[in-house]
Length: 269
Image: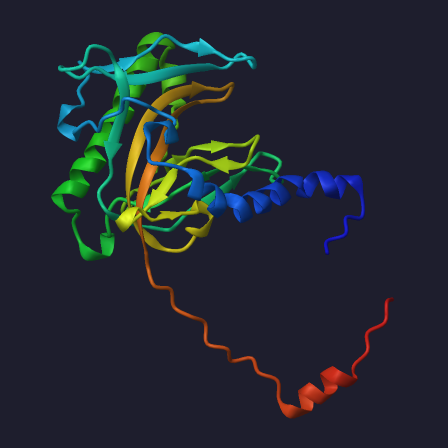
């Protein structure tokens, strides 16, 4: 049993406690879910081919201001056959991922969300495949579109502050950090993780290396006091867990040490 020494400790651990509870009943909840459209946050969605994404059909809607005075600019796409603009959704190639990672708030004591960091290709194997290259180019083009929109509407200073969840380092493949759909009030991850046969996974169990194919919603641009952030959110993930190397136990007590352990008594200072 965990004993909290103060109310401060209780407040600090409360988010992680609720996250633990959510982890326990998640599997039970999944049994009640269906694969209807009601399961998803977004409805009437379709994947956009990377070639179909152009400056002519990507739409930046009028900014909406929240209670904190920050603006959000929703991003949509207008398909030729569609009567109205729809969410802009793209599919990633089937790639290696580092697994689900949590991110904390500025104070470092509360889980603020989750990401699924995924290298766009394996730089050790040489050049990217055609699919990997096309996906990388599409992401860069989307970033450029967002930059141009911010520059036209808000000015160069705001455009230059843009943050896009694609980290590039010389000599290495870019790593994409899309966010999982997460409700911090209920500590619920709403992104669906699934595999062959319709089997679903608890996202919090997917923290090890894996291979993933994601449907990613190019959701919006969020304007904070400090920068403009492009929001990429993962709608669902086809996941293939990878076999992990088991640690071989080498630290084994000798007979003398086992006797010492049994005889040793610790007293409070």
